[in-house]
Structure formats: structure tokens, C-alpha cells
Length: 242
Ligand SMILES: [Zn+2]
Image (cartoon, rainbow, N blue to C red; front, top):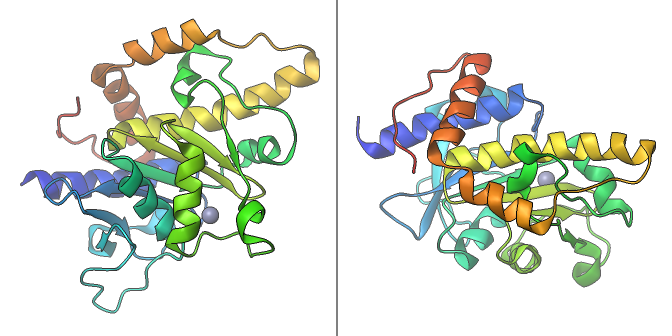
């Protein structure tokens, strides 16, 4: 199979993994930048991630316009993905989800920060994007490029950001790493709530976070990927990820 076909299979697998691991439910999405057309990204039609097949995958230009929709209905919040790809040429995969443990950190003054070595890839501290700051009272969905670009600005060059009262975004240089960060973001948030209930939390230092990030190689990410594929009942595939 050509690289694109393998990548599309991986994108289906990523959807199934994120559903199986409780990062997404009937909602939330994961995308990849098109490997041959950096001005496009690939995303499923609007469907629960657990149910997605290759035939559901559609190409979009970075402004969220479907290239050949064939009657398929796109996700309303595709602008999140397009705006991040537009702002960050190095980013190859984006996840948006409503991962439950992250929500309290978007609506309180408590900062979400890595406290366990596996979770260091979430970045030093998650910024919080509040749609109300610029767009007033909305249904909280990111439904146009102006909103997407404002969110991408808050994300900056980080791997993750929270969205107040809504969820979060994850951006990475590979699909597998975006899945990795999304799973460990939920775990870190869950552990942080438990730790805070017990007392003061000792977080990873900046140097520790940098050291773990530098060491989280393709091999490490692939090892997690193989495990999550097995749990989700999907082939781990052969696409080489650096
Ligand atoms: Zn959403």
C-alpha cells in the first residue's frame, strides 16, 4: 500500500484507540496533515470515532473547506484543526477532545502540569483558551476560522491547550505521538485531581519535562501504539514513524 493508504488506516486506528481509551466518546476528533499536500488535512465525516472507517475520511483545505465531500457531512469543529495546521507547519496531527479529567482545569485557577514521567509530553503547563473572551456568549463550539485561529494563538508552540468549559487540543509532529499525548493528558489530569485532594503536589521540574520530551522517541511511542492497537482490536501497522 502507498504511504497515504497506510496513514489513512492509521487514522482509523487512532480514532478507535482514542475511543477505547476513553479520551473521546461519541464526540471529539483526530486528524492528520496530508503527507503530499501540506495545504490539506484528512478528517472523518461527522461520526463517532469508534465507528469510523476509511471510507469516512475526507480531505479539507486548511480553511476547513471539504475537497470532495461526496454528500458526507463534515464535523462542525474542523476549524480547530485547520487553524493549527495553518499556524504550525511542523504539526502533522491534531486531536480535539472533551477528555473528562481535563475539564476541571479549564474552569478553575488550578494549572494542569505534568506530575509523572510518562505525562511529560503534555508540556510544561497548559494554557486555557476561553472562547468568551473574544466571542462572547456562544454554544462554545469552534465553528469558524476566526475562532480556530484565536485558539491556535493561545496554543502557541505548545503541544496542548485547554478550552474553558469544553475540552482540549493536542498537536504533534506525528499521529502516533498525538494519540500518546492525548492519552497521557487524560491520565495526568486524573492523577493531578487525586494528588491535589491529598495535599501539595510536587510536579516535574522544567528540566525533567525537557529531558523526558527529548527521550520520547519513535520507538517509545511505537511501543505504546502497539499496546493500544491490541486493546482496540486493530493491527499495529507498519508505517515507520520517526
Ligand atoms: Zn468539541
